[in-house]
Length: 363
Ligand code: DP6
Image (cartoon, rainbow, N blue to C red; front, side, top):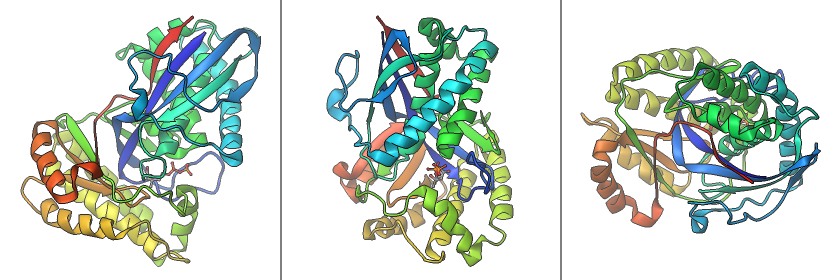
């Protein structure tokens, strides 16, 4: 049996930066992101129904799945530590899967998870500052659930029934497991706006219009400081003092602004949050920065826009590239502006999404 699943990345407006010392990626503060759509990780899984328990990562990406643009796919080169992290995560999800499935009214495979060979591919360049760990851990989590289900087609049906309570509960249970692999991945199971507090992530009700998303790719070289290292280093900054209270207050203000669709306020809060997170980086011991000259050029150009009456929402993750969110109705207008400023080849374009999906189950 072959299975194809995918999970999108997400872009945080309130950042997860700093985690508790306990295991399992418990954040110091609540965060909130927009789920993306086509910037995602695909997992292609060969599942042997008559065997159990083996997990193997295969390089490459077989072109058997329908409707995929293979020329756009980037195959990550997983190395020793990355493979081990995924293997640990596979164990984590396949151990948790039977109870998640039963809770959803589905049967787990009686003798444990099927043996699988998985291939992964991203639609964005590695190290481009787009959180590939979020999409890859979310995609692997859902793949592990599928490998543990007695009837993957039935699971696919329930997963895609968006209004079913059992489906939502199952996605949130997966998000909790995914979080333990990589924190921000727990916000990639629903959409378009998702909050994450302590152990749980859930969708936020908003009055926002449908949003488009651009990335101004300033540099696609791999980052030197991983976000896991950044989570520790920020605590050495003198600015860490009071950070949790400030971001928590801003998080609540953001929820209010999203609830009423106040884009200007969302923009202002996201801009401030981005500066605060990067200030923590710049004042850590040792100080570090993700910025490239192009980042500063872009931030200067957006500084005027965010003060305007109809501002875009502008933010950076732990990377040099600039994320810009605008209502879909203004997409073409902003595409013209961004193309003129940065050149068409520097832009990635996406939109809001609804989270991880089981795309194909075929024999
Ligand atoms: C800057 O989720 O990558 O993107 O839990 O250690 O895997 P780990 O960290 P990760 O951190 C993401 C940090 C961020 C902000 C955010 O997405 O909220």
